[in-house]
Image (cartoon, rainbow, N blue to C red; front, side, top):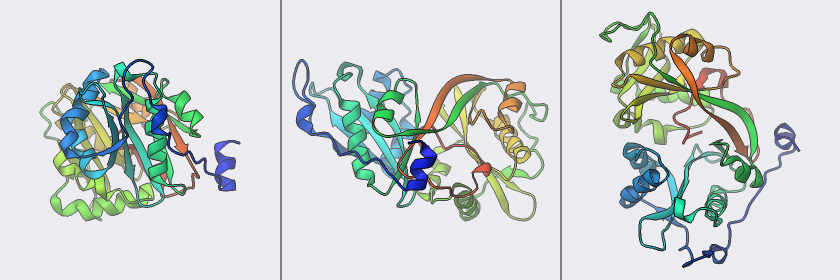
Length: 316
């Protein structure tokens, strides 16, 4: 049954957590039980990222450990974590999965499946869970009942639209830096577009991000975007919420001019007409492809045409 049919029928695939006794090493000691991770595990989480060849992403892990539900299991050899995964809730019936990592030395032992089954059980039967799947992770997610929603392409490079000033002083029409007083309006605009409450993460963005910009043409905040560094060499622009593609481009232009790195990254739906072609015409190239997938009943919500980029691929 396809995704649309499953949604119409109200069917959700429910997976019970794996018995911990099955997580026994083919060679060596059994894996410890999956536990809830907290801020004290920050160093272990960043070390796990490095183990898999990722940037440590300490600010992102710090935010997720504070605002989300992070599950992991300790490595039997006493060296950090064997694996971890993050569940971020958007209200009671929608959540996202991110940062699903298993240490290289503990791969192919069923830990990834066990972490995902534990997360789905924690999310609850009535919760729709989404994620960005790589080619490597997709077979597991399909086995667990996730179905494709749309494609995602990461575009990266030095953004060079004519409107970007070299000194970063000029602002496109209607765009200005966000102020502390703008947060309630940003949350309202985001809730209307996303269709669920993301305050738990968005309220932390002023501390996490380098810059936040709002679209305000004199009638209040109509859109916003955030720029943050996922490592020292590139800046991600996301979330990006705007009334139309032209406004979205102006927000990107403003933030790109002020970025502290030369490389800008946008995670975009390649089948939408507004930004992918524009991004490529102004210096960005496709660098990675993922697939947005959903587990459970997917229902229309918000105004998705106003959502141009996610907060992060760790927060679908």
